[in-house]
Amino acid sequence: MKKKEKPCPKCGEHCYAVLLNSRGKKVMREDEFCPKCNAHLSASGICLNACHLSAESQEKFNRLFAAVTKSNV
Image 1: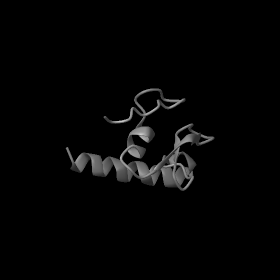
Image 2: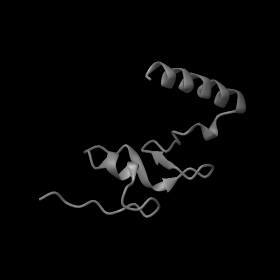
Image 3: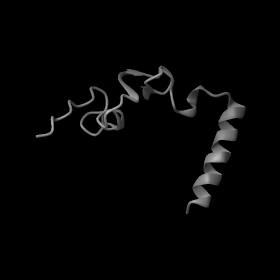
């Protein structure tokens, strides 16, 4: 019988960090969050969102993401 994962104290039952970590390798910190956007931190301690980037880098990231999303539709 598969052990039921304990829910995330922030996200509750449906947490992406808990789901990823349940696959065998800890890839997200379930109890540490970005001080700027409140997202889970990666196992290395960095935020994977673009909130920490400069305004110029955020714009570049948004253009890149939009291009990739558009090409996959």
